[in-house]
Image (tube, rainbow, N blue to C red; front, side):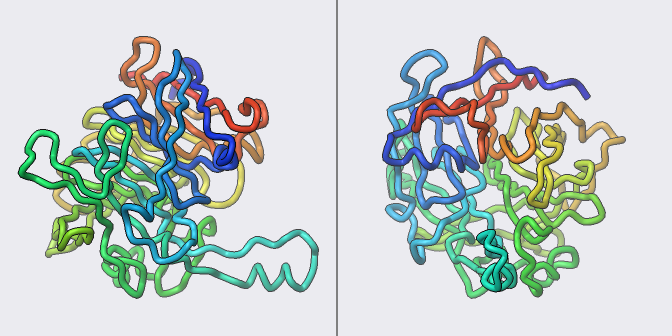
Length: 358
């Protein structure tokens, strides 16, 4: 494992009226048209920034996801991953329950809050929205084939959340985490990574981590009707998903992105604590016929570097490939709970760019 090498930084400038999102950035994607898309785990919108000068992105546009996908209420989506594939922007919510935070008053109310677990319907969202030239559309003609219409849609919702959580109810590894609603950040079920390549969708789980092994789910979807997606059979014996177990040194998945045929994995603690945040390269993930398990001794899983971290701040949450200083495959990282030194006024923040290597 080599040390991380910081190539430089990008300045991200947002509109003043939504400046609060810069302290809760949880996902980022750089699209081929040159735009940066960002998500926060506290909102129901996507943010688009455009290049305004060298190493500076601004011209902030805000897109309410409810304008393209039917949301159930005003609760947050807890956006944890964004990716671009096949002329669409994909996004995923955490699919997790959450425990209420105590308010720090050392009171009976705080004890009650710690005993309260909430389920928010909007968190169970896996969706795609057509995008062109930095604009999202509910429906648009395919740029290369006008006879094909690209339509925004999301995985069909059900009483348990959606078709994915339905499919996992009886899973030998994950079913328990749905029968007992273990919250996120307590090794409960918690999606925090998304990478899409062609028809293959990879979802990285922050939790659960099983005996030190993290889990990446693979699935495919198809349109059941306009605006509604369903799972395709892709696994063994007609299963609707595959499970890939990976040895991330006891860490959970915090984000995913593709670099060529390889999957770059950002890993961090499952719990609410500051600790190692490590970047891995997972090879030959595409085309696996069924469930798999990959350790670090076979050559297909490699530790690349650790990201610098500070206790209680600079939590790496989102990553994307980004061309920088002549290196096409640099790694852009954005942070939740950023250090004060990253802030520029009230509406701008620095993101980091690291050398990724081949």
